[in-house]
Image (cartoon, rainbow, N blue to C red):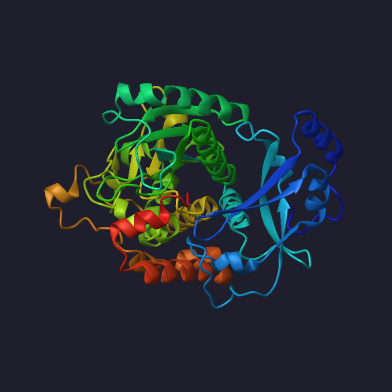
Length: 454
């Protein structure tokens, strides 16, 4: 856990940590943050400099707050341009030696200003603050990201599936078996328990789920899982792409967020008198998320390429609706099988993908849910089946373009207040700029521009 100011001294226990890292062969440490376009940016220090970095930070320009996914810098009302500097302070409590990248360790960072205070637009702090605000009301959230990605052959800029076979098929798993075994082993070595791995639907696609954690840790986990999946793929001569679409016209890859709401008595997704056993606070939380979904889409899937995936009848969650095990709705309630509800009941937000900053996603979902709890919202009638096939005129569709999603975020009072003026404006600025610059791009052009960015 990082404090609200740059530490006044090197953290206690640093000598022991350095000795353990050195004994394990670590000589370099990657310090990373995700920008508002969802791209993970990194700096690195030799192990001997980690103490200095944890005390004084590593400098980085605030221009990255308004970088688009293609590294084009734009200007917002508060951020953007060549001036200023921030300090990146590693969270040493989350530092881990990288089993997939021997000789290296990794730590997420928090952002501070040179005078020592917290940077007002720090995304990781935003997620932490929203979790703390919810906890002050007696509630907490456990969350995890369900990762989908495509495995492509190396040595070509075009996507050629590295593993073939039918959707969810045994033959595809056979082709990916050694990759999957090595990936799971490596994640376990890095302290990430894996729930399951399986071949997915579209060309070369696979999926992996990790155990739930607190929201900030879940966002950290998302970055570490993707890094590890890419590195293990490189060892096999493959490329792992978490982009929302790698083949135009085909179903894409999501980064679904699973979450459950708890109080001191346990999981509020079971044992209540609400729909399918939801307790009142859990229902209100989901209702708050449901109301804010158009704005949340700009945070969680606002890249222009995201809308190549957001197609009806492909289980992408394009409908502003919820339902028990309803895979076409944006919110799928998962009650768990008999006897498991206390620890397994959760909700899945299906419309997000890996172009999102996971800290922004976690913080924004918590803010939306907390607003629902404060207002005592109730869920509308649930949706079942495929609204597109059943011609359900009363089920609203989520924004179908990046521009529309960006405007929904711009007009969201809940997320404006939660993020604060500076962070909110930076996110809206980036999403508007991406939508404007790539609004007329073809599917082929969008895929080519994004396939290697995540």
